[in-house]
Length: 138
Image (cartoon, rainbow, N blue to C red):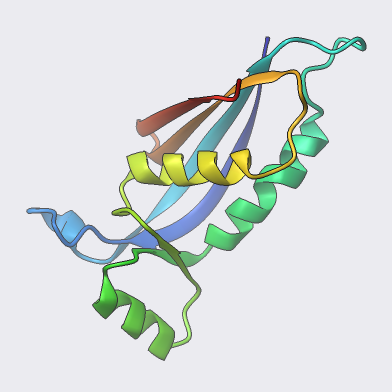
């Protein structure tokens, strides 16, 4: 069984290594589809939608209207701190692929029901382009 919930947020990033326009600071209206998979419990429930919200919303709230930066992007981090911007610093370049990994890793750190077997995170950078990361729990 799979249960999914969508989340939306606005966030800026840049890819300094990119040969095109993505090397410049720019923003996206992101969407994430978070899917949980596993066996139904005795009540016929995989995970409560409210519990999904409680787990995922703090992650999304942290990223909303922020600049997400690779830990080695010293220039952007310095500028963002200097002008008192909200920043999220991650240990990988800020591609949609790595943002999906970041979200999945954060979810795995939460207290999750024992009946779950995997988590799937789709991060839409635009309305028609997304990256997907799946993690087995057991």
